[in-house]
Length: 368
Ligand SMILES: O=C(O)CCC(=O)c1ccccc1C(=O)O
Ligand SMILES: [Mg+2]
Image (cartoon, rainbow, N blue to C red; front, side):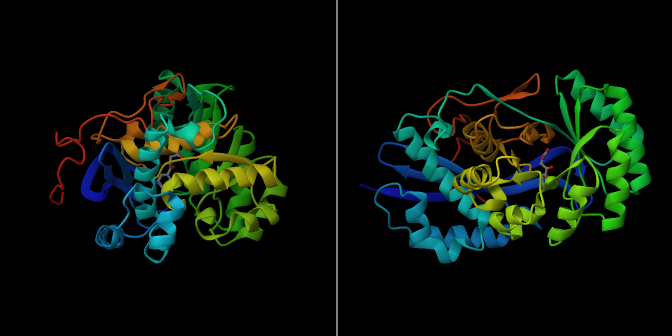
């Protein structure tokens, strides 16, 4: 038996920059990871994001070390990958994500199951509910984006906040609420921008705009602050950045979150993302897992959709990020009436060609 691993660099562009309180994202670069046996090919995607994962250079270095040290004769399990390359992958979550997604794609194909079933999803799931992702902007820009999303069928909107003053953010969300009516779910994401005092002011004012929860109002390390904030208003607190650096058990024990944001690319793989969501549900039934991407290309988005599909009755997830891209590696699952389709073919279920027209992984492409 032979089994090989290869990777190729890619870049995709956003159609409009996505501005948050912590960054503006204009393009995404990463690596497609391809694992091949005599009979099958598995594809994964490693798309690092500054501030969230290792750098693109460190991701490449990790993947190169794995390519050099690869001695598997059959496609390894994620456990075997960790046993062989744990030291390389510990500080390279995006590389681990790409590599283990390729392994899982291949293994799920071999088992003739869509990935979410292979991960342990018990029942057939056609689609997962999703939120539209709305970046920072003026009141008028935010309202236009919100109205467009509702026109396209979304019933849950997540607006980036924290990039301008609390007063302006309050005006933005109030204006969105009056534009979209009472039934649309509104979420905010401050990406850690606020002080405790600003967060209290913001959440109190968001109450009459009917905001359901705010992601990461405070700095990622301020677990106690989030726990206090939860008791001050009826608005939920979601932790995202905190989940990157703090063990889930600690977050749960501190009662610091109503919602946990699960990003497979940041947690180091769909297997870990799924395990994290399951653990959260098992320990605290009242904590809601929400799966999101880091604005990834089609393979990692599909991987994240499978994680969402493997969680029973999952809440609306931040998986509708394909529409933020101008170019992509393949045609990803589509969104209809606020639901994203779950691929049902064996494996990750993305078929197609790279944006450059090369058959995915056919050759080790030169750098973008
Ligand atoms: O959750 C979503 O709607 C999309 C994902 C998203 O907002 C995001 C994308 C890249 C980096 C960080 C974040 C975030 O949730 O903070
Ligand atoms: Mg967030």
